[in-house]
Image (cartoon, rainbow, N blue to C red; front, side, top):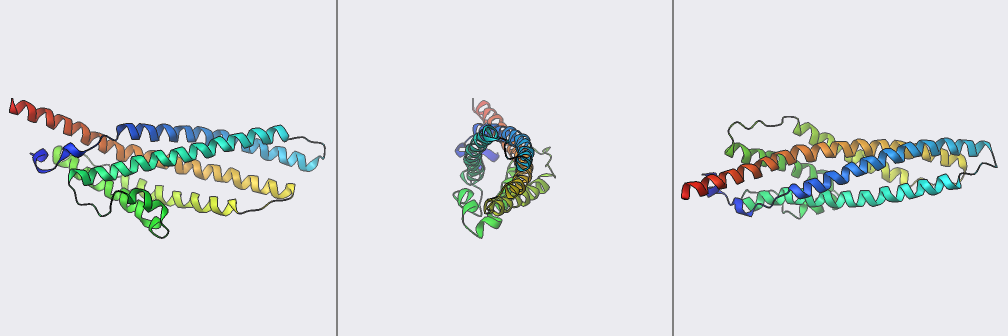
Length: 232
């Protein structure tokens, strides 16, 4: 039996972390949409301000500022939840007994260390996808791989970097005049759209990789029950 060949008792459930990170991403998407809508409204208010010296947008700026603070807090929380989920997804494979190309801590440092962060996370995501499928196939011969996972992982990583680079570029833009503020606000709205697409792809990544992980947990529980019944 497979349970006698690999130590599945070391596997730690990742369901709660998957639920937390998905809820965080859903909240992030809601705030991104709200910020984008309000950002468009703010953009047109800036145009009106540019055409009139007596136009007051202080209240709008206050609300927009609060929304951006909430968005920033949500992004930080989402990153933390994602790293926790990603790290356990990777670590569980090593705990079970499979050979892994990296140490589990690289699930965090791979996103941080320069140069390594260009390729480590996507390689680790592909390794997670491949090896969970391998384990599930050993327990369930009828398991069907999701052939779209490779495309989703690749698209997720490309958009992750597009979002990251775009954010870094726009963050360095200085503006002093209202005309420059209007131009920057347009860049900001585009940034919200890119981040939104990136968040959606990350959700798809988590759902697809998490589905295989959850199936493995279910199969292990079933296999354990069958083993216990055989021993009675």
